[in-house]
Length: 130
Image (cartoon, rainbow, N blue to C red; front, side, top):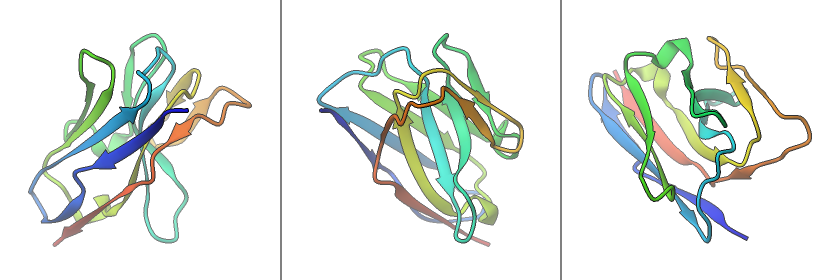
């Protein structure tokens, strides 16, 4: 069974950039929903940027115009380019795939196919200092 491995996290100052990568090991991304979530201390996990099964892309309002999700042509690596980072972006970032269909709302709430657990990475820490 394949798995996902995130990389690219770290500690930066406000206004700086990071690029997260999510490598799919043992399989390629299908057309099923895939993307990035994050969880800050004491908060629930929220969607950040997702690619739905039809290829449409959605972002949480808090990251629009600053973050960009993409994937490579081989469908084995997912990226999240994060620009103009802010302290409130501090969180553990998770890559996920095989989520069925999904819809991300402005506040980061994700509606997705019921009963599908998906494939999740172990997470990578992003810390943004003020």
